[in-house]
Length: 410
Image 1 (cartoon, rainbow, N blue to C red):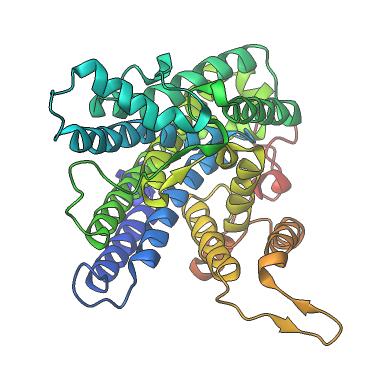
Image 2: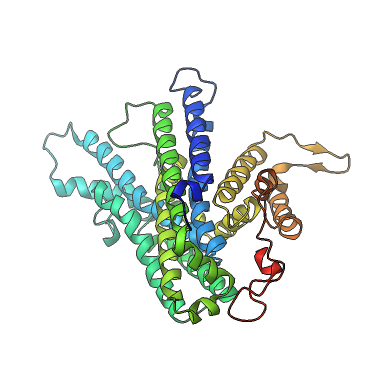
């Protein structure tokens, strides 16, 4: 393919321009800017939505472009949140403990401070000792590295075992879901080292910035989320461009043919699977300080299924479609579950959207799958006049019938 990266990917400058304008508009209307048109709580919702858009990009890259329907990527999202949450909870508790011991007649020893921190954090599960996984919780830089390393290594090991065995299709989806379920069930246990069902809380209180108002902190996290989403979009667009992008699309459409041509199918799949797990981990590390709490329910398999639904509704195989789908469903969910949409009285029954929202989401997924497989992103194809190659069933491959018209529509 000829041309520069931007000319081959016209959606990139358009997306980045829209993201920049959106970020500027939100900044100018935030409470931190003085206007107060946007409340701090809604600003946090927007910041969290950008993080969900980032993990949706990862899902679209692994599913929409490579053909791997992973039902476990929200596990990597949650792991990223746990990694940064450990430092946030440790450092915040350390500040509280040191302040409470400041007036002691005899200054506390370092071990006494550590013991007091452990009691504060793990007293809720009947313990006072730090598990081994908290060994580096006092170091911000190490925990930031673990945000990338832990999801990446887990995906690398799981992917290597699965892909070398050539597990594909629905069986691979079941394996990813089983991995997620096993991880969630383990984290629900009190002896998991991450406070079981209680999870990690108070993550919105950033150590060292307690004097900064939440309105300002929320705006900073919103900026960080916007930058991460823009960088993630650029990275994903670069990955799907050129020869590499052609190969992973070929794996999606006909894995056996790509392997016959001499490409290391397992290597390509493992790279994409690991890369998207890292992206999901970074998204989770930005999401949960804005949410304020993380618990094992966030890693349950249903969360990864929702992620696939978002991408399908937005339009898989289109990076902007994944972003649109995640933003659309996230904001709509906030409206319906937050009581912003009034109930509908029918006389014999009253429709409360808080109860019916998930049914509506599932119905939307079914309708999109049946009648609009290109999702919301397909509307942009109609507007721009983009069409699939008009090959008319010509025999363009090494065997008779290759890349016929129905294949070009995929």
